[in-house]
Amino acid sequence: VQLVESGGGLVQVGGSLRLSCVISGDTVHNYARAWFRQRPGGERKGLAFIRSSDGSTRYSDSMKGRITISKDKNTVYLQMNNLNPEDTAVYYCAADSDLIFDLVFADPGPLAYNIGYWGQGTQVTVSS
Image (cartoon, rainbow, N blue to C red; front, side, top):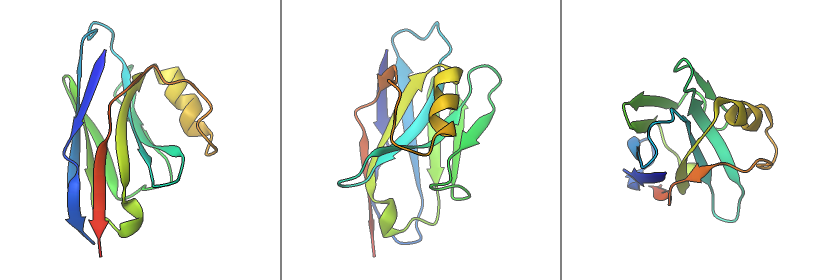
């Protein structure tokens, strides 16, 4: 399985970006898909995921209300609005089971589970 993110870049405060992540390889399995981010010097934190079972979504508190996760066939998107400098980070997409992401997103602490697949990350920089 390969995950490739795109859509990152430099944006001004208050701006918006839409990140994309295409999955390829073993697409027979319907993986749940998630977005994480890692700020400079910080830990990787979950932002949102979309379940493979029913397409429902779950968001962490980190950017809740300013992000929307969606999926179209093999691509998952993260729409981000009203960005601020604290959103500067590397954003990663991931694929695994509904159960793993339910466990990850139920725990606001450090990432304690091994995620099956990661993309290479895309840099988002918000300038003031």
